[in-house]
Length: 99
Image (cartoon, rainbow, N blue to C red; front, side):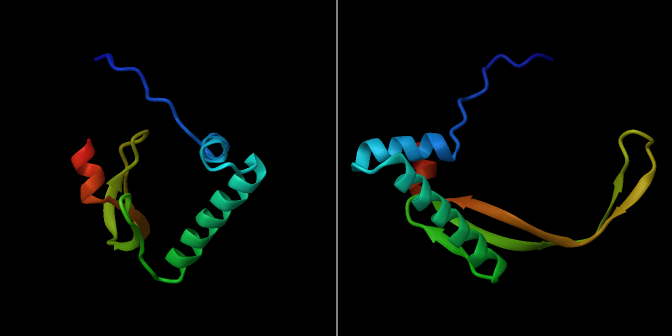
C-alpha cells in the first residue's frame, strides 16, 4: 500500500522563532529565547505533576501507563512492557473545530 498524500511541512523552533520575530517586531534571537523559555517552563511544570493549558491550543498532561505484555517484532518473543508515564496532548475544542 502506498501513501498518496505528501508529508506536511514540519516547523521547528528556528522556523517558529523567525515567524514570530517577523510578526511581532522582535529579533530572531529574542523570539527563539522566548520559545525556549516556554518549552522549558512546560517541561518543568509537567515534571512537577502539573497540567499545562494553553488557551486555544490545548492541554498537556502526564498520565500513568499500566504494565502490559508486548511482542518483539523481530523474534516474536513475548516481552513485558513495564508501567511508566507518558505526556499526552489534548487539542482544544476551538482547534478541533478549525480542522
